[in-house]
Amino acid sequence: GMNIGILGSGDVGKTLGKGLIQLGYNIKIGSRDPKKLQEWVKEAGAQGSAGNFEEAAKFGEIVFICTLWAGTENAIQLAGKNFEKKIVVDVTNPLDFSQGMPPRYIGGPGKSNGEKIQQWLPDAHVVKAFNMIGNAMMCNPKREEGDPTLFIAGEEKGKKFIEDVARKWGWKDVVDMGDITVSHLLESLAMVWIEYAFKY
Image (cartoon, rainbow, N blue to C red):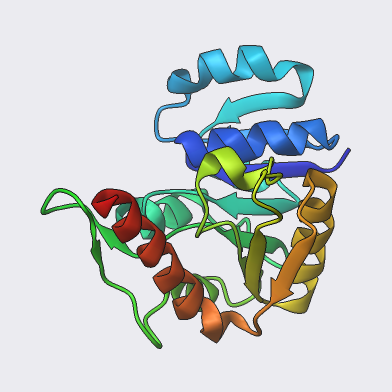
């Protein structure tokens, strides 16, 4: 299978990594501390490995960014010049945790993470996806209440890839919201979900 790199070793990165392995991809998760991932690598088997951010970005023909926003720019810098011409899937949200919970929203029109990542990586095909759903649903969307909707935005190449992967995971309804400037709408949708979760 194709090689995919994932930057970020939290629940989101680990969950997407597992889901992608099930589809036949080889995964390397990048972390500031790859030792944290020993357990995940053991479970993942032959198709899963861990390394630093640079190793993960170099390994991946496609790269997912699943870091907390505060560490994202630094993670991309540490990953080096390993994004050219690649599809980059942005799963981040513009959240500030510095004042406790719930986190504050620091995005908005023209200030979205998707746009910033596309500016930092001008030669990459950035696509915003999976940022407004809990990690438990990402690779396993089937629900008794019916089929959820996955909203995506960004470069055509990236959207094609995500749509293909999402359908294999069981997403029936994948909606293309437009180019990467629409990221702020997808990111504010995440905020609705987060605020609702804290209130109820």
